[in-house]
Length: 333
Image (tube, helix red, strand yellow):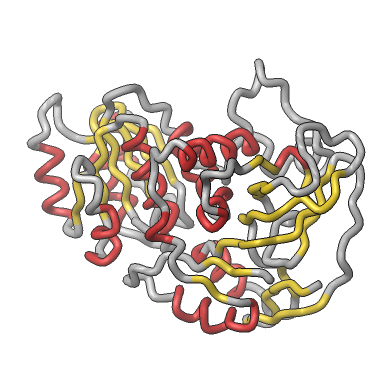
């Protein structure tokens, strides 16, 4: 089988032996995987003198079920999430805890964004918002877009910001999401919003090691508000501004509880539902439910398909942070 890797700050398509199924795992023939530009472009940049698998979000058809796998059958369409099990590869061997069935009314290409959707959902959970609260989503790449849409589906009051008019315009179909490309305009709107002004939470979905958004976010939040770091941004927050509002600085780690826990992922041992309600696997399932019930619309994000042979060009185009093309889905034969 073929897979895509980063090596020496370049991208290669290499051959690898197709994996054999094992207990508690699903062997999946891949239909689509989604490129996550922020994460994967970073991995390419740090791949000097080493080889790194790329990708973490995909969808495919179950070819074989390992022992101790219940609820799945050969031929099922499943979404899956989480490196190193999910990658840009023709076949995937994935723990059952990182998979979710996809119903027939969901487009497989849209389901391929499941891992990115789980990350967006977990970020909102970290913010601990309550019904009716106001949030700012700063940075409208693919994760920021999903955060804004899911927050709107949850009936939060959503203000979305990005420097790129092309990216903000992707949310034009949802009139109740307020869109901004200028920080001053956003600040004035928050001040005029009443109820003491400001946002209950700011979710930083942008990248950049030294971003003006870190300091600005503390001006946007209300007293005792929260700033959640979602993107790859350096947490450079002035103490005086934090102290003045007793603001909380939080960080969201990937798709939820279970991520990076070998027992949950490698050994496929799920957490008890009553103790850990929203694992990364259950967040993945919640994203699929939102698609199935038409609560969010990700069709505008998955319009560009590429083949493995076209992958270098695909990554080059995704490096443009002002482009309205936020991701590309890789199609496997």
